Length: 282
Image (tube, rainbow, N blue to C red; front, side, top):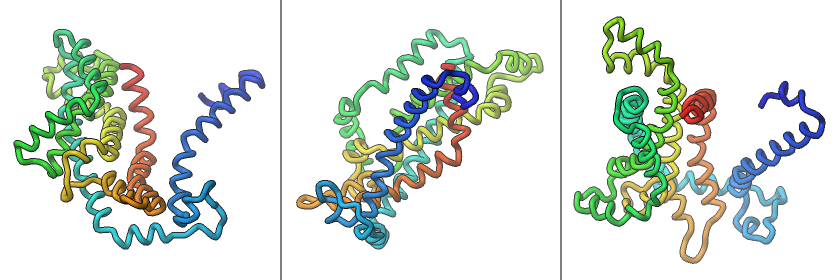
């Protein structure tokens, strides 16, 4: 909603809308702000009830401690980066052609197939955890980064297909018919015509898949040991048996979410356009 349109409403409507936006901003930014504040507070100030936010209790010790012992965190960030990039790349490589086939080709019961693909997201991870663990264990792929990336396809691929199918459905059919008149085949049409105009939804799907893989905790917990631990598992290790080092945990969390925030800022326009053109039209 633009401010120009907002000004056409009465004072009461403007007040209600602005109040709603303020609540939404505080609700969304509040946890992030508390995360940053907690990462800068000393442990004794952080565990007080309520936390002591006096200026004397703010310090960079949490960050220096985490960075100084960066072996585990660095390995976790590297593993998360490899898993997220691998899962995202494969999801796009498989999801884009599948979405185009469901949107444009005469696939029997295409709408039903698309619904079943999305319905897989409703299945809780715990339902497939045991058979998945047994399968990967039999294959000798426990604590393997690439096997974890393949597992992440189970929730990344359906979302990529759903987002891109909505966008492909909204593309004017005339573009493809004109290409067909010129003798261009289906694969060439998809590669040279459809994909170049699909950069926003492709970017949105890629960022969404990357963030989902980067933040995933459950499957990483049961399918890794030490070598392939991702950054959420490394952060969880700051919770010890007798004491939880909250400040260092928050500092590690700030470091781990920084790449995701930068990614979202850099591609914010493509993300907004992609979700608007893809999911809203799907």
